[in-house]
Image (cartoon, rainbow, N blue to C red; front, side, top):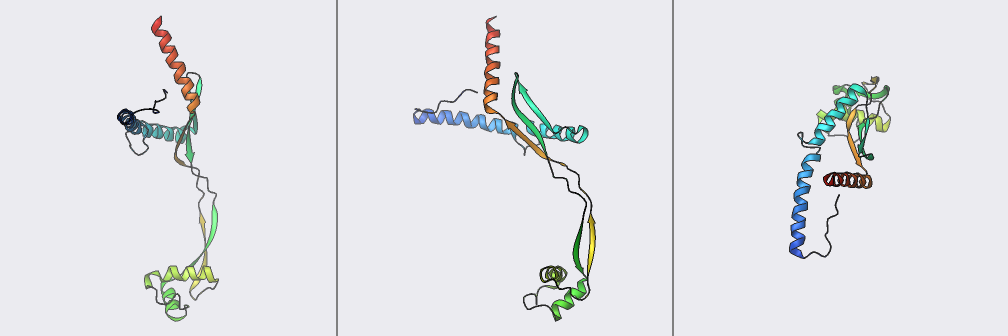
Amino acid sequence: MKEIQTKGLGFEDALKVLAECQSRYNELGKVVSTKDPDSLRSWCDEEARLRYEMQGVKSWEINLGGYIVGTYTVARTKEKPEQTVKRMRVDGSDAIRWLMEDAPESYFGQLAEFAQKLAEDYMLIEGEIIPGAKMVEETLPAEPSRYKNTVLKVDAKNMEKALQARDSIALEGEHE
């Protein structure tokens, strides 16, 4: 890419360069936007997601004129193995009775709709099992790695070399 001259400009000329750059930035921003569903980036993200889900492809090298100018990679969630967790459970009416009769003052007077959660929290913090409570085991299913998003990395130096090579080939072709 051609370097934009910004040093030594007068104020009015600097404003013109700035306006041109902002205009280009706005246009390029539309192309690379991850938020605009109609952008080129969104289309590539969707295509990458489909290829990942259907073929398992996770990464692509971006080659321009023999130069590797970047990579495009599918980011994934971490795989979670099946796990068994223990949680305290208490019947809501038992929790309310406990709050009204036996709870420490710091817990007393809370709204009844939070009684079950408060009692469960208290049991976890204090290690005391209140009347009506019981320990239950739950098995959470394993979760496979899933598509999360994509990451585009560009090697600016190689991109510059590739663009210069492409431009010089185009110029040589014009003279033939």
